[in-house]
Image (cartoon, rainbow over all chains, first blue to last red; front, side):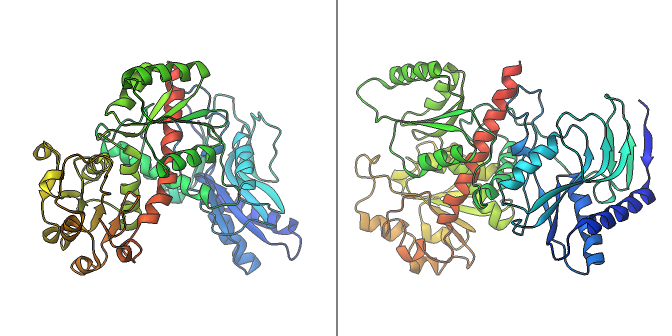
Length: 177
Length: 321
């Protein structure tokens, strides 16, 4: 199997900086925002984005983690031997009336983003949900597009885009296998 | 290979939860970890999640229960399942027949999960062998009450972090207690040392074959334990005269304020409910700072949500084959 590195550590850091600038430029003055990452790589990216945003905006931008397992659309299909693990949602703030920057590593079919939006509105009523992804790849199955895209990748249908991050994998790197 | 986050690659594949005796420590831990993810469903604005949407859960209770039945109903509702309540006091009809007959009727309705409580040991297992639906044991005779055992270890683990090395006393009517048995299996598998405490007349006959210590004196045990679980005296099950008087039982095996003074300051006081206040436990202790009794009830909901979720997931896998 061939493996192709499409982003290295420096490029990822650069992209996150651009993403935060983009986010800030589109948030109305005085509007409260919060960053929520989809487990598990989205969680790490959300923490990094929130930390950069907090520095640039000179105020603490709340950050949380969303576990979407209970909202997946394939739970009640006959499955192969592996089931998803249910983990915790950790959002220690009220999402009502905030603009929520929903963060995931890869936007592919759009099913995770759909599940995440349903999960979020069970927690409250945000002013808006904006989707930010590091990688936007082809293969959409749902009518969902990201508001903030770090990098657009073309991948064959049988290829998988892996986002590796220092916090979870020891180094920053995006590869296609 | 780069450093990987420590995630357990574990697959739950039991379509039925019949008892804790047959579960591995890994399986028990997996249920507890899963339950952690369900706690927040009950604290947020919409107290419902969709994983059992379109599924039907039957509460098949042949014995009285308020707490357990309500907890299962609420757990199923919070997972978006529909619930049928079936309560029938056991009648003159022989139990085997009733159960099989009932099971066949349920089958015909197309239900997905049966939660069963029955006064005959093995009833849940019998049902699991005769119907297609997933079966969850909510108490069978004197055998097991697995979700109570799970919520007890969940409660202890949540407060203490782990059960490894903890000393736990289970006090009272051990002989008639399925809670004591499920607790024993779960607690010992997770590394705790369990002592059964009570009068000899309320000990199971084969207690020496169980992985527990036995003591006939609460005063000897109280100083040493980290957790004490006070069982309810089940007057409805007691035959003969297992102890001379309620007052005497209470004096020797009741958890009184006086006795609590000998206990470790951070001892956890548990009770599966409903409490006979003043008998196995004084009110001041039941409502005191060491009591985690209401915490147990709260955690029971998350644990039962996890169990319903997991047996349903396993049933989906089974269907594929």
